[in-house]
Image (cartoon, rainbow, N blue to C red; front, side):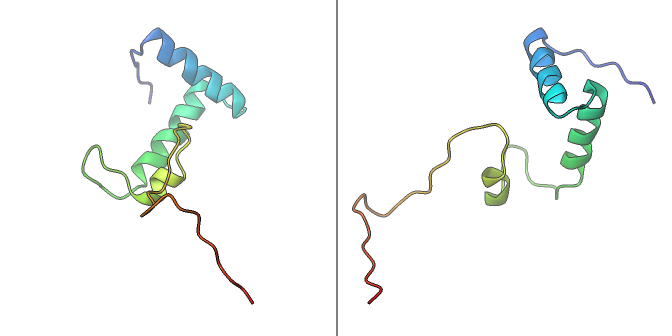
Length: 77
């Protein structure tokens, strides 16, 4: 089935680069992205599981919160 999408120029350009990096056409890359998204369980919009956040490809920095900033020493003797 053919579908026409209207995308912002910058978004389309970034998507094309991602597709090329993956060795795929833009249509193939979008198809794989949709398949991956549609196979996920239905979570409320805007929520992500911890696994999603850790496996995210959007290159954001995620740090686990610590109870304090002191280094932890472990004695293995």
